[in-house]
Length: 339
Ligand code: 6CS
Image 1 (cartoon, rainbow, N blue to C red):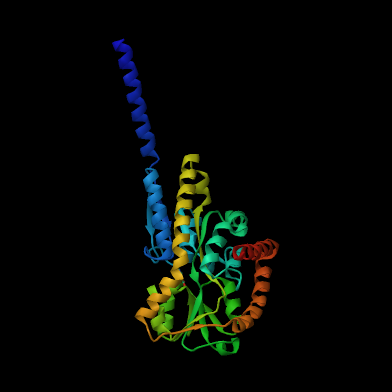
Image 2: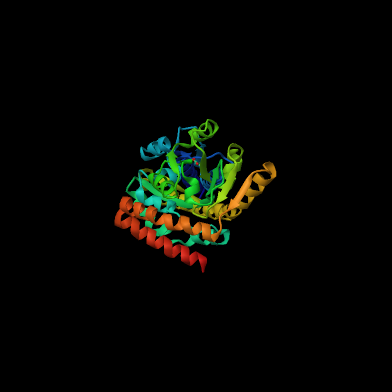
């Protein structure tokens, strides 16, 4: 009896030691790079994702905010090479690598009304089903796509028509379709990395730029321009991915862990995102009361919508048949979010 009891105890102790060994052997430190700071939307998402992973496993996440690993393009190379396990990169920078991702940049394809934004990002078939294989082909497992607020344009002078934009040098992110957009809108676009924008505005190398209000206020872009214009043409969208080889090599348990953390972080950021526009605008009004805010009327927007048709054509010629299918689906998703 005693010897049996000891054997049993010995067995249990061995199992406990083995189990502890197994857990610590799999306690990895995963690297996560993003294009923003910890208090910006991408940082809020990343922090929530990290909390969930660390709460439910022995793994840890190391977040690398904007600037710590170079510009967006540098971080993407590191993620594709497997030096980083996770990356948040926005379609505004992914376009040269993944032309289909520029569907998020085609003007007047996404909702700007906060009530519709949540539904669109949660239920869109294009986003939740069609993009997966597109990112996979670049060695990336797409985890989340989420909004950061309506794209608004800040300039030195007021504009209401494409003719008013003539000669204005507008900075865009580096995806080629953004150059097509601002050309179609009548301006002279210049693509550049985030790290160059503030210097370019200060030295008048550019006369304006587009971004959501929350980002404009956080980085003082309103103080470097005179007018902020709501054109209604887009939503700043971003995407979180894992290196596909890393993801495929994980145990089923760890894959589930990542999917669960993704869901929690996505739900959280969608709740936050619908308030970002208002929060950003209110802060701008408070800290910069003389700043001019313009909302183009429906009639004024109609001219820009007309010009956007050329951008859609440019998108299809770059992204091909599959890109067109994605875009058509996004239009249906937009209509569904407005029902
Ligand atoms: O304009 C940009 O380059 C930046 N805009 C936002 C909202 N996030 C990161 C990005 O680099």
